[in-house]
Structure formats: C-alpha cells, structure tokens
Length: 309
Image (cartoon, rainbow, N blue to C red; front, side, top):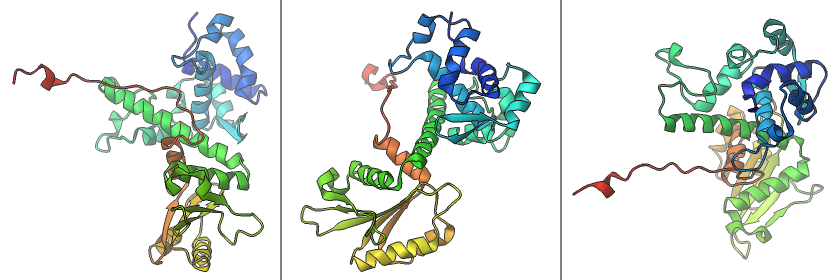
C-alpha cells in the first residue's frame, strides 16, 4: 500500500510520544504496524535515493508537530510530548492535520515566515497550509515549499551547532570562512588559537601567503536568549588593537544586541557581525555541514528561438 502522507502520521506519531517514546526512530516499527506497511513499502526510497519515503514523512510529521509546540526537544534527536500535544490528542484523537496545528505555537508564523509572503491587506487570503493555495503557479508552489524546507534546515543546523563543543565550533567557523574564500580558500592559511591563550581571538586567517593581511575571528556558541552585548564587542575590538589588526569577524549562534551593532559602526576596525540565522544560511550556501541531496532545474520556452524575426 502507499506510504501515508506526513499529515496522516501526525496523530499516531504524537500518540506514541504520549506513550513514552522519545525518538522518531523508536516510533517507526509501531507506525509500520499501525498502517499495515510491508517491508517493501518502508524500503521505498525518495527520488534521490538518500532516504526512505516512510522515514522522511515521519520526520516531517515530527517537524510540524514541533512547530506547533506539541513536542519539545530537550536535546538533538530526543522529543517529549507537551501539554499542547496532549490537548491535541484529547480533542482530535489520532486524526491531526495542519488545520488543527494552525492555532498553536509558532506553526502559523513559521509557515508565514518561511514563505516570506503575506497579504496584509486581506489576511483571510493567507493560508497557513504547508502547500501553497491553488491560485499560485507551479513555479510559485515550488518556491514556497523550497523556502519552507530551507527554513527547517536552518533550524536543524542551529540545533546541531548548540551540541558541539566550543573548540569544535571555532574550527567549524574557520572552515566556513575558508569555504567562503577567505585566505583564498586554503586551510594552510588558517589557524585556531590555543584555548588557554587566545587573548580573545579564536582564529586567524591570513589573506596572503606571507601573512601580511589577516582576518581575526571570534566565535561564540551562545544560546538563543543570550545575545552578544556591547562589552563583548568592545573586548574583541580591544583584542584586535592589541594584535595591530584591522579586520575581524564575530560569529555567534544567537544574535547581537542593538548596542553592540551600534558600537561597531563607530570603530575604525572593519568588523563583520554574523548572527545565528546568517550563520546557518552561509553554511547552507557554501555546503558546510550539509549535503546536497537533490537539485532541480526549472526550464522555460526560449521564445526568441522560435521567433521568425
């Protein structure tokens, strides 16, 4: 039989977490049995062959439940049902879809923010459905769903970054800047400073072979609510001054306070600030910490080719 849609998996998956399951992997055997899926059904691969349709749809069900606040994740890969989740089960049983999730948590704002589109003049025309409304062209539908996927990937990347050690995070940032072309993309022009004596500098990338021009790096793996403050930036600028450096990059998994951003505009040093969202976007853009699992090329008729002129 066909593998159910991710929305059909939502209720049964949530019920399993309500019974004490803590990971999607633990839920798969029970879902296979509940829907009467055969081994062949569960082994069907998505078009790019990187994962099964079954597991992929269950994971998407988990993502949508999480955005509605029905599940919380105390750590990567572990999920716990919430009061919202129990309420959804009590009101809807195992029949839960995006329509039921719409009023809860960040679900609506997540869909809206992912699409980057909302009709402010007529809010009723906005649909929180994960699939665009039928009045959109196929190209717009592809774009909207791609943006939703991209937003989900950004958030997964940040979750993964919160789990790495500070030292691993510093190495990751240096690798990202190399991938972006700093130091001509050569790892031998980069170094991560010693944790015991970094002097406020976590990494250095030499822009030329002789090391005459260098970019100094500060990398802070902060929780989302812990913004980088003005004193943090002042200390970094002070470290640059101590090294007679003029260029710096300050990267964080959280964000920067308004005072920190205002301060950086008034110093002579050229310092770039990269917050968590920008960091995730850059990692995706430069294929750091992610793999390309599929690609699509949209083509259209070349009208000039068929013209008589």
